[in-house]
Length: 225
Image (cartoon, rainbow, N blue to C red; front, side, top):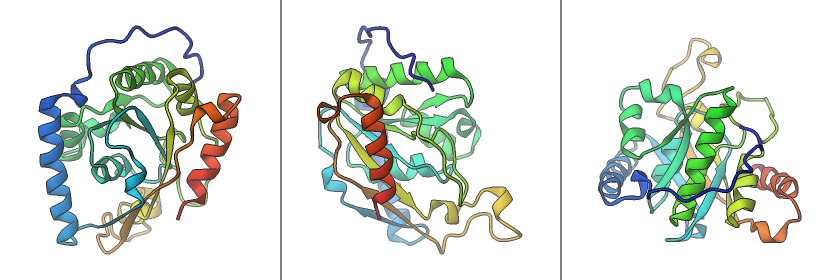
């Protein structure tokens, strides 16, 4: 994604992911996810979820260490939300079904037009009072690697005057390690715990530029936990 996101948006129809039918699927799927957590099939802990408002536009910006991060973050919420996800996930069994029902927004890596289209769809969701999930690193980041945040989340916040809640996910990369980091170990290690941390919202009104907001967003995400 880049910051060529300058043309004024004429709000479109309410996204399906914020509609009644998606709401029913959201409650059903999240109930299944909570049962999975309660049975400790996957151990998940959520910290400070109450900072997320129950209604109104909000951006949730998270680190990205596993292909399952979108599902964990979406499942941790108690309201409907749309999320950006890598287009490859639509081909995954079960995960592809979940994100289709949640009306996730596909983005093709390295494709700026796809990234800008995703930002436009998220801006429309915010105009309709929705919550959106974005991963500013733009890809899954392997252990020990650090990447710059892409500007899309901060630009989106400035355009819509919407607060950003920093989120940090810990442990999902150990639950489902990237193939090159398995080293003969398990491809899915359910003994590992995943923790989702929510941080204090950042208000774009408190910043002079998207760059200033982006700097504090990155620091806030990695300071959690």
